Image (cartoon, rainbow, N blue to C red; front, side, top):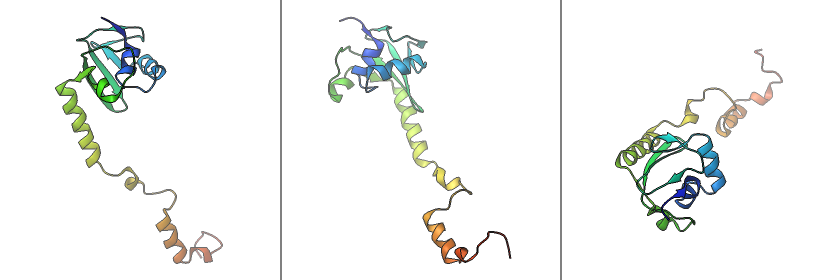
Length: 134
């Protein structure tokens, strides 16, 4: 086997759970082969560079092997090798997400939390029939 469809390879290498998901992501332009947008029937060969965007993470991998069937994860990881620049960028993005502030802390208005609700009830908010000032 010298070549294999990109959608089948992405599925076998466990980048996507199903081939239809792989086809959908390829159609959205989130998969590049040798820095070119591709169609699902594009053939890949060992040595090709495949760029896969999954959420905010972009992984650039070199195709090392081809497999037409999906196997266990250790076998699937032997089908590709992630480039050093891609690995460093992915780790830096993970570290940045880990150090980022909790998004919920930036919300100043909205529904009260359970703790805030209890504080409102304790303050006697339920004794008033209207929210207007007396």
